[in-house]
Image 1: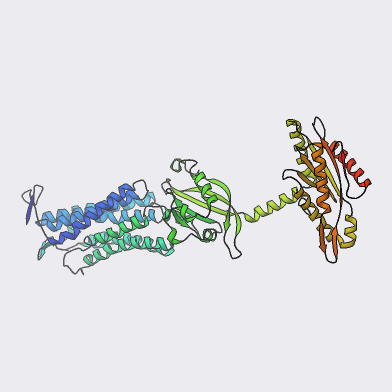
Image 2: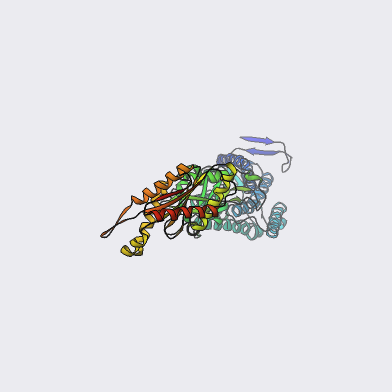
Length: 549
């Protein structure tokens, strides 16, 4: 079959084409490349996408040029299309190097290096077209092998010592970058790197057979025929592993040796990466979980997820300016362990993950374990606010809380009571059972008092065996009844300690105020101390009310 096209030809300005079955795999490869260009367009917001698309265009120029070279009739026509191929084949290694550099997290080439390499690329392409002194091609002729007609591979010194080193040295750098990425990546990303490595190596190996004259098809370059295989591998990586996602860009920041847990999610809320420390907090993290919604992977940690959603949704992530977006929150999560698990406290930092172009492509969740610090602070707070022996409010804190309650009572006009409890035989217990026995009894008395009171009554240890209770919203009669409940709760205690059964009684003084005006806490304390003295004078287990209790 002979096709005639009205364009510039050798002698008569008409270019002729004939069909050969050798172009069938080339046509299939071209279709695959166009499909990949569509995918690149759909991901055009990613930094690597324009370079990937440019590589595909160079590949398409090479494929289409070689197709037309095989179909063209005449030396001049074949030479024209062969020269066009060199535009693609010369630019492709440099474009693909840019893709792999960005994809592996190394960023783009330095400006000076990029300018020098592209200048050399342009010089090689120009030399191919001009072919001065037959330095690129020697004596061009058409050779025929059955239905295949091709240019004879009579290449000059510049082809051997300029174009071949150019193309193969750049591809070697690309292969080394992909191998390094595959070796250092976790399993799921190693497979992704491997797919790209094979997609690069297969056509390179096939082209090498032609370049070094060992192709099983004489004068036929099989590199373009196997581009379809590479295209399928690229497509597999694109759709199965999502080549344009953030994982390779964020991987440099995910260092397994750091003590803090790190989880990386993309803008759609899918898990993209994690380090070893994060696995200790979230056992559900695994290579199989990569790509799944983080809501599913961390479903057992609703507090963590809620904080993540709230902070991530506080602003549109794509609208942050460079350097901002750091969010801090404190969370507490259950961490499984051999002893049944425990709760650990973390400071959560949620910060954007940016591409090398500055665009936000996801978020990194950093978990800094502050459990020891939180435990220490809580202990210090307890020591500062609570009596270490009984767990009741310390003297100073009780005074502050009681003063605040008096202010509220004055403001809202309600009455309150004040009770002061003193143990009758604590010294005898200390003599009989030692200091440890007395301490145990004080703890039991404190617990019994709290159980006999309302949750919002303010209970504190003023010192020794004196326990003070502020009773808001009680009448005088109700305050007196509260004092008697305290006395009865203490009197009911019996604690076995060795051969001894510890029991004790308490005297209680009570004062009640119906409407507070300018009463000071110090005056009320003085008044209730008087009532307690009167109770102790009457005998053990007495309750004395100052007023109508």
